[in-house]
Image (cartoon, rainbow, N blue to C red; front, side, top):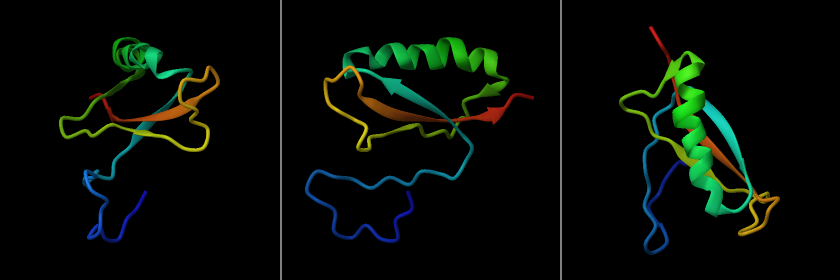
Length: 87
């Protein structure tokens, strides 16, 4: 989500530079108490079998949009994981 300037951030908010790169996008469905299971699947199952690796300078992030409903079973959030092809 491109931003042109960050000179007036709300208190306790920080700006981070996320490098442009290729990402694998995953959808976590459900409450946040099961989020660790989604991360475990990505890192221990999907990534090793994918033909991709996590880059050393990688920055992963989560996107919460209007589909996110805190604590609800049908809540959705998006997990962006940087990837590079394995040699």
